[in-house]
Image (cartoon, rainbow, N blue to C red; front, side, top):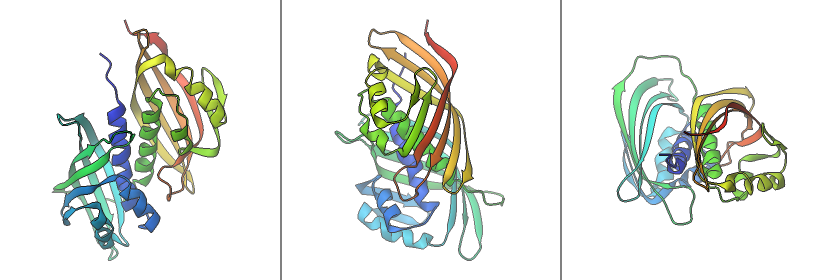
Length: 280
């Protein structure tokens, strides 16, 4: 049975957004973007103490001024619990360099809950528990911003693709003003009008669409520019109840304004790895 991956992509979009503020400048506009992922009554517990309510969150950030932080995600799992909330559990390796030059590295377990709201695509964190699990051997600092920034974009893109509602508006936030999407089966898409036409055709023939990213990699290729590659294993069900499968390879050129909620796709080349076929 093919299961929907929409909840997973929604939760992971917010999860990878969480780290980005700490891995860049603590500016007002970026803090406002962070507030966008927190419920009003969010509860945050960590080694720094306990905080209740998003209104108190900006003051909590003052202690991190001048820090360099990196969050290397080792594993993550999303499930839906009985009350409809999403439970996201993850393990990371956290590195920091404080203004004094002191460096730390340790593993942290994240136990979090997110709540979906009527009419909203993205859930909000209602609870974040950050539990240090072990001090690790020192090693050179390695930035993680590119991974977390691009993974939030990828999962948000997939979340919107899986809506199957033909709505092009959410895609406008994650596409550069001049973009090219090179779909191996339909040719070039170079405007939101063309994308809207495509969204009204192929996706609307489906009643379920699920994506499973594999072999993700990203590298910086210039100031605020990244190149991402990933294989997307796809499973879907047509409106006449045929189960389908395919695998595609995506290579994206991404431009990033850190003050925006998401980075943007400038070019995307999509090629077939395993052709579309029926699941027997």
